Structures are given as structure tokens and as C-alpha cells.
Image (cartoon, rainbow, N blue to C red; front, side, top):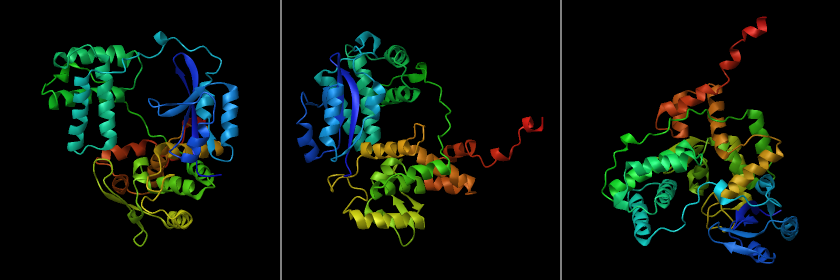
Length: 379
């Protein structure tokens, strides 16, 4: 089967159950999807959509059989077919879609300021999206009338009632503070705005047996190489996708990570086993620029497709855990620690600015815990 993935999702649009069809840019798949009845492109969702019925699901599978692998796990879990669309009142708060021209211009100016300060693309998107949500909530309030009370109201009526995460709440506060100080030249006193307590979460770690089971699944050598490289070098998703061919220093046994999180370069050791796998992959695919190219050979492999590759592998390995790509990075660090690698070296390899960040792996390492004997065993 070709290296193409189509993702099916379920959604409610205008109180109708719809199937959302997503895939990377591909002329053949676009020509095929247009053959489906009642199909239309939704620019807001960036997906093709059609009525959610069993007949249409069957049509999709028949149409793309042998052309692409279809991931319908999300659609299956939604189970929205034949269920009445829930009323808007019971959904999370619906915010007005459009802002006035002045606010939109200020939002654009904020994004340009972040770019000029060389913030990362993900940070720029996170901050502008968070700020946009806040301004949509207060769409009737002029910018020069925004105060601390408006932030508190947003936290209570939108964040708390909508059960949004503490991380998102902090992102909004940070974005609002930056926007008003740099764009509006207004200093908000955020001491009166309560920040959520910092959650102390342990990293999710897989056993070596589970990692091996996941990495053994892919038959496509590109898929196997991508997942294996993330685990074998402890890479972030973006670091893998941003790799170029020249970043693999096979003679020195190193991977060169350039301008990653925090605008830092670093080098990561490259083992002989993963180097051999990369050589086999290179001979099969012969990438030109990016180490892992998408359907368009001039573009990087997409984040969405990489996530689907992992999802397929996890399900096929029979692992019933919500494994993400970052779990492989956490597992790499923990396994290094358990094998006796000094914490300082792990910090350097992972690119952590503070040793406190790396120390969290000591809480999930089983090396010392397994030596503790429970008093229950002596009863």
C-alpha cells in the first residue's frame, strides 16, 4: 500500500452529523474525494466533509481501497451517527467568529512583533490563538477598556466552566500580558489574577518490551525509521521533522539538532543500529533535502501523518495506552537513566535548560524502586 494516510473524524455542523476527511495535499486523493456524494471542502476545518451515515463510511472505504490507509479510530469512537446533535447550550461556550477590523489588525501586529522577536512558530501560533480566544470572549469591550477584571471573568466563565487546562489558562494570561504591554502600551497588574497551581505530572514511560513491540510493527521502512529515530535519540516531534540529510553525521555517530526549543543547537549520539536503518531507508527513498519528506518531495513529512503512523503501530502492537510521540522521548530518557547514564549527560542530550526538568525521570525510573522489598512479602 502506498505511503498515504486518510483520517476520518466526526463533527456536528449546523446541528447535522458530519464526517470530516483529512489528508495531506495529494492530487490523486483530491480527485477521488470529489467523486463522493454531497462532499464539500470546509476551509474552517481544513477538511472535506459529508453527511455521517453508514453508507457514506462504506463509500469512503471502497473509494480509497488500495489507494491509502484509512484511520477511522476517531470516527468510530465518536459514535455520533443517528444521535441527535446536542444543543449549543450544553456545548462549550460558543464565541463570535469574527472580530472587528481594528482588533484583527492589532492581532496581526502582535504576530508580527512576535516574529520580529524571533519567537518560534509554535509559540507564535499558541499566543495568537490564545489571545484571539480572549478577545472574542470580550468582543464587545474596547481594547482600551480591558482591565484585570476582564481576565478574571474570562478565567471563571470560560476557562473554569469549559474545563480547559491550567496550561491553556497560563497561555492566555501570558499572551494577554504581552499583547497589552507591547502593542497597546498598557501595563496590566496581574498580581490580582490568580494563576492555576502548577500541575506536578510524571512523564509517561513505556517498557523496553512495549517500545520494541511498537517499533517492530511498521513494514514501511520510512515509518520504522521515523519512530525508531525518535526513540533512539530522544527527539521531539518537531526535531525529527526538521532534520535535513546533512544533520546526520555518520562518521562521528551524531545527529545535529539545530535551533530547537529555546533556539538552541545540540548534538545527540547516533547508535550503529539506527544508523544502519537510516542507510537502508535512504537507499529506498533517496530524500533530497529533508530527511523525511512528505508526498511533495520539497516539503517535510507532516505532523499529522507522523501521529497516525504511531497510532497505527500502537494499535497493531496491542498496546492499550494513549501513547503519543513524546512518550518515546520520555521512555528513552528513563531507559538511559536505568542503564546507569549520568543525569547530566541525559540533560545535555535532551536539550533541557535546567537539571530540574531532567530530574523528573528519577521519579519514574524502576531501577531503585525494584530493589525495595515490600513488608507485605514478609507476612
